[in-house]
Length: 464
Image 1 (spheres, one colour):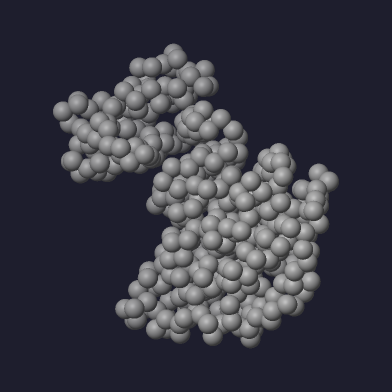
Image 2 (cartoon, helix red, strand yellow):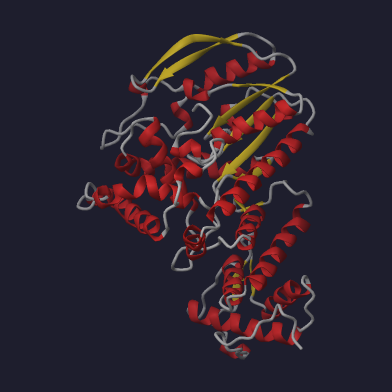
């Protein structure tokens, strides 16, 4: 009798195409190398997932791999060369279509275990093509385990009354991961500079504060240096044809001043940090005295913390580079994973509206600068991080919907008929459709005051 992991396939008939019927003969590995597609490896992956929960039916695994090949044939034209991740996604989809989360979870956890074997350390960086695959699948496994891996499943939580339990579990998981990261940081000897880096609205500021809290609990003294005060005067920033300033580039910061101040702080000197006024766009130099004691760790959070020129005056032996990304592993109504950048755009729209009095429509129009800078100054340096952290909360779309959905009827009117703003218009259409698909959170006030989400929706205990 087949193991329970191999479900009855009423919705997905078992099919075993012949090798001659394969449309895909080669795939691209994570390293970029092209290798021959081997159905036997698909069978082995499914079978090992079954073994992890006590299954023994290899024949069913072989038949399921036939369904995977059939799905590959439907998706790709003859001669196509998909990536190994695309093949793995199809394996997962084939299993999930049975409506048995246990099977999908077994395969996801199998992938996570493969990552553990490669990386050996629980929080070490697992980066190929600058994508943290280990953390990605760890996040998705958590979502599957908590029944929140799709829009439909999340909406079910919001409508059935289980959303508070989900929120509490997500908050606990986030704080548990912070503790693990802090423990890893504390293992580094002679640490003087802790860098929290990541793209816009990934949760750097709150995470930096919480890491500082954990270091304090461990008896470590720390001090936070706010790099937002090191922006150049606004008139020194170039404008584009739309009159927009680019705050997203590291060149918008006084890099030489930052490096001089960091070097002096490490040496025990007192510096005078500047103050940048976002309302006037002017920087006042030598505004506030600032000093780090010899036993203190300096904390900074910056979009460009991994950009070498930002902290080149400090030896790598004295640094710990912590990278955070909002890796929301949730599938939309079409079965596609939601783009991380779309979540971060929604976060930034919400935050800018209350924190900087910035119209969400303007945030949407500015987002192309954000993406350009991320691709140029952030993504290429992810491999240099000491660890990578997931800063997403699976329930947050339901909260962001409350704050932002009312903007969408008017959101794209500004860009609809402007061919130069086609990027903003198409992005707005996509994100608006995504936001509409989520059910709203019944009680926004229920979000904990110390939640990372409060960085974006306001009302939290931290000052930003």
